[in-house]
Length: 362
Image (cartoon, rainbow, N blue to C red; front, side):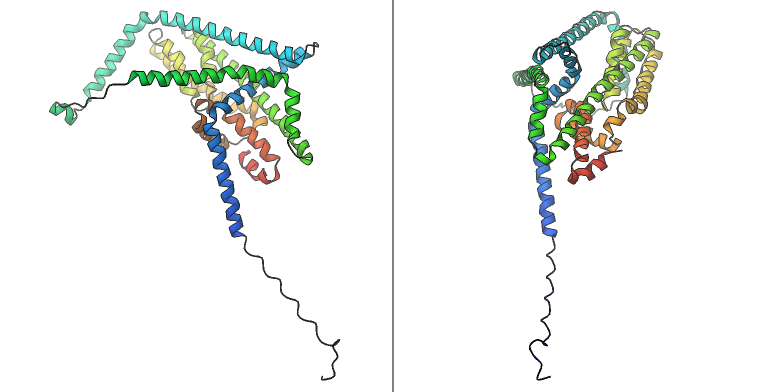
């Protein structure tokens, strides 16, 4: 034992590696940064809603007119000229629809005096029925009434004028944005792809193509569904003898496409026209027609035309409508579905976001 050489001495014990520090604080920081980033994006969308809504509406119009531009360029027309012709055709169609709608509405309001008395009599009857159930409040019993302050109409008109002027200014940008998107379509797409690193450009190019195909299918599908519902509504309203059936039928059909608010909005035009002209049974037919057509479109036609492209579950669609409706109001409800579907396409092609894409999917 005493003569043991240095070679025979046992090697020192290998130090046990220190266990890694728990990464719980790092994970907390990671989630905190995600929450802050998400809040920043939502705040940007809320305060910049005019810019984003105008931009997205221009994108939708560009996708609608892209096939027309491609058809015109096949006749060897310059793309800028083809985009200008397509925009002029769109503006002419919109002007024609507005002119036709204005003339029909003017004719409708000219006929209002013929049945205003009946509507007023029914309203007075309802008012008398309501007054019979009315209970006097303590203020009525003591003869003391609360006087409301006078309305400052100058302030109301100023606010209304400001909102209208902002809306007109924002809408005026849409045709120009759509035109430049059409005339510079290939440049914009390639420039957008070049913003990504080299190894991700192929994925970005495919993702943009899928989003383009989805938006085009969404617009064409909704147009066909609106025409089908409008034609069916027009036929039913004609059979029950509803005035202006050719006008309110298609108006009701396209209003029915608005998420959540579509059913009550689609009932208003035919119900208003039916007052004083149709029997009470006609109102039942109108309500039944709007409900049945809306349910058929929602459960049968809509999945047939758009289900493969959107691939969103009902919960995701509902949450998307709630979120974008809260941020952008009525336009948010209109744009919620394509925005949510585009988000799913992006999530499905980014590794770190794939779980969110699965959650949004069917």
